[in-house]
Image (cartoon, rainbow, N blue to C red):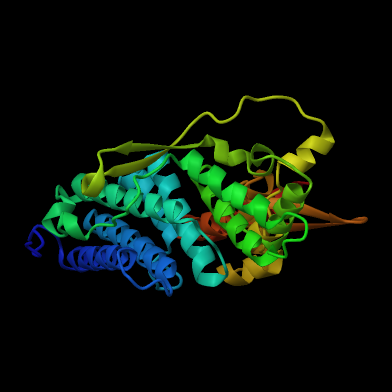
Length: 357
């Protein structure tokens, strides 16, 4: 198969696209490998990396900056997705699929996670389908120009609906947590997999040991899948074709019917987001990160209305003490504002208003 890239691509986007295709090839090779040692890790690492390189290639080709102005380093995967929505017409379903792949990779790379073969295959094929979609949309090219069909991820079993795969995974968790079965670690590894899949419908999935323990407790108490993983009811899959030409796409549905619950039911059915991980910047850390004094940092937060934005700040109450923390979104908004606003004017306006009060 031809390996050349159209000359219309600029030099750096061409290099990034080549890295993307190389990583996708490695992911496919690892999936089809006879060797099981480290296979899921290799598949997910290269699959996620292929998309980061592809998105950066497409963004750079459109002259969208992909370097953090302060750090001088290229942006991360999450920022690529945000820019992709804006400039590459990434749909909500596509972003959800990429977030899920990233979350699965994160758990596999940094801790212990366990996936059924069906789930790994579903995401490998969905990755290939989406990669081809983005190649056509962003570069007017087809994946078949770079990878022959025979090397794409293959399975002896046909792809199954994602809801059936989730049910199977949950049933395994239930069996592992049955009284007398001492398979606590295996169950937790499978719980982490299902928590990662919630990235399809949630922007801020961060899996903590408390999340895992909360789900484990619910399963031991006999809670159903819909009670322990309510968000996963919103995920569905569309499978077209068969064999080597199968295409898999994930979509978001309307989810379960809404009903009113008691406080006790809500505590058992809906897991809290690990707020301390999401809102992890203190006032001094935020100011230091931005290179501002504490008063100037406060003035900028007021100017951007960050103090009134629940996505940017959260108040933690410890007894009679309230401690305010800020999210990465607050840091990003403030950093971007510093590149475009006159900070001296913001500070002067803050001092004028404070003097009037």
